[in-house]
Length: 140
Picture 1: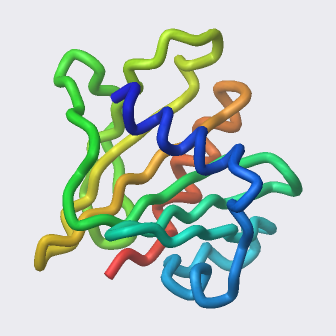
Picture 2: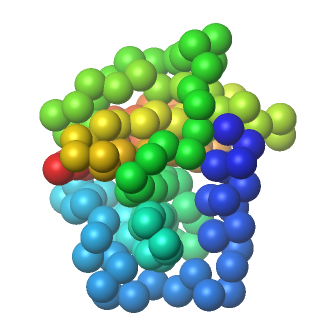
């Protein structure tokens, strides 16, 4: 799990993490009225989409041909949906203050395609809002 989270943090902090229209086009539509926008970066075999609230990332999504994390049963939290997909949210294996308000899940899209979705909330109320927001993302 740490490897995945580090990848996301490195991409987010990278000065070359610059949104391009063609990269953002690979990202699924955000729910109407969310007031968030995607920044995207395509890599070799993956696309990382960051949903930003101003400058702050609140939701991330990586489209890939293979999941890069192993979700541990002991870290299971909420059940939910993302679009038409039923999911189980997990607390990531990250030993930092505030990690109890982070969640991650993997959605199998078929044809060797996966979406790893994570949320970074600042409080319990925002966590519930972001999990609800994720329900409205149409993953195909």
